[in-house]
Length: 458
Image (tube, rainbow, N blue to C red; front, top):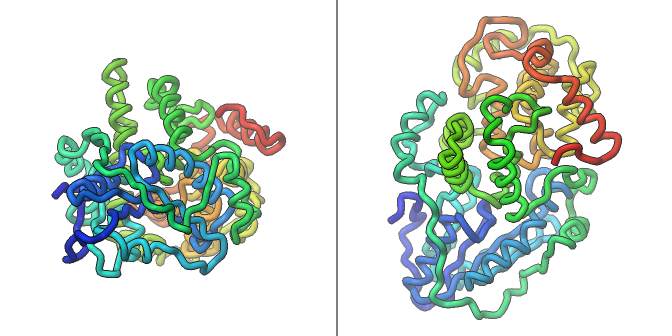
């Protein structure tokens, strides 16, 4: 069996069933998808068609117009890609909280069920006795192939490099022997790019968080952003990645999180383009593969990914030692959310989150470190960061961003010289931001966006 595949139970495929079911939850695409490829292979061996099922409900954390619309904008593109392959596709839009999904009913009629293998879904796998497989198409090197939790990039890096020759390969094209010709299940909702916002508006979700000013969902948009990165930004990435006003980063994190694009596709495209144009691409691949998959490794093995208990012992000890240190100033969650601090740079990072649904990676570290510094306790700081990120960020509710947040408290880092409030946790200062980046250019850009609702650079 493919190393990306895990058999979830001892049940065997049902030869009398009508189709193989792929429950698409994390990898919303009809190309570059190992789970779809494996499901197609099972369907061909059994000589039955393939049915792909995707569901979007209202019960996930902080469900709102921004997160809903971004996912809905990609539905019609996924549908078109799957139809071209000959697979059936059901997109279920549950419009009310507590509304029951038809997933279990579709599973009962399936010869086998294939699901996306993902660290955040370990407790939500098929349980009704049908033959089930989980396939990792969210990482370059599948998370389960790393045998234990790694506590820093230096420990993970050699393991990743040893496995890369096995996994850094294009996904073969999907072919299906039998076209799905069954009736469309009643759960299917007809979604187009044009009616995505209207469909979101009909759902029982938070309508106070509008769609992003910068990002639209879907495979097509993801591919266009990748092409822009390759042709206009990659050659500048290593030199200018920490300068927000330079716009040298890929802006792909929302698309990786939604599964419109895979990290493997990005890694192969960057490697091929870099080789063809004699560019050094190692720094980007380090971030995309080693650093991102360090966060997935953390999420795979940690008992909790949203708790200070997940931190290394030295970080927990230094937080305890400095828990009574005076915080000045100390802000409430509401003040943070409203970007109402004395620091205009920090306020700009929060406004970027409110408007775009992302924060530039280097400034997001500053955003998090200051929340830690200005909160009454480390526990309150973590709760505030999780709330703001999960509610507003298009790349939130993801192992990578959970890892980035806990990095602000010492995860995957080392002890630094001791100081008040932070203890031995790394701190970041406004003076450092001014020395290393063009703070004024960034704030001017965010100010223009806030005043006009328009982006200077897309």
